[in-house]
Image (cartoon, rainbow, N blue to C red; front, side, top):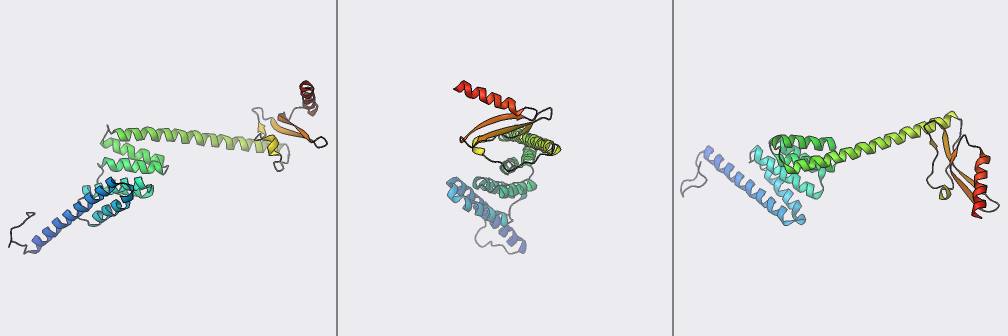
Length: 244
């Protein structure tokens, strides 16, 4: 049916009226979308207006799936700019459902997932996007960033795992020896030094010697459980004499 009519040729049948209403809805949806795009160009103060426009255009239900996919992807873009990462992710997913070839939707889904620290999901979005556009530079760049983040996460998790394992071994060694640990004291003198278990399962302690009568102290950073107290006292005495 034509988009314009001569005077006196108004629609008469229900089919003609329905066609005209559909055309009017399409025009309005397109106009609202363009208005939303204009708001994005105007800057951050108008982002909420842009989201409102895209939402209204989607709710018209007058556009095709591929056109609605663009609207959802556009709204995902604005939500990313606003830091609404969960909403951006939801919009990107909806855009992909409506049009799996919408590469921008895959990219924005990856960006949102990355911002939410959902690294596996972010990688999945990139992979699916690159399947459709293997030469997409933005997606390739994002893959590199995701891989870097994943490596950092794995290294961080490995450090935590090793620290937990070492702490468990230390606690086990202390319990095996029937030792009782009191509250940490005099941290201003001992710093962050802590007991540790060496590869031969021998305990090493930081030891603080307090001389109340002269208001002084000596600090032994590494006092092995197999050491003799006298040996350390001799070293302290020799050190003191040397300083004198």
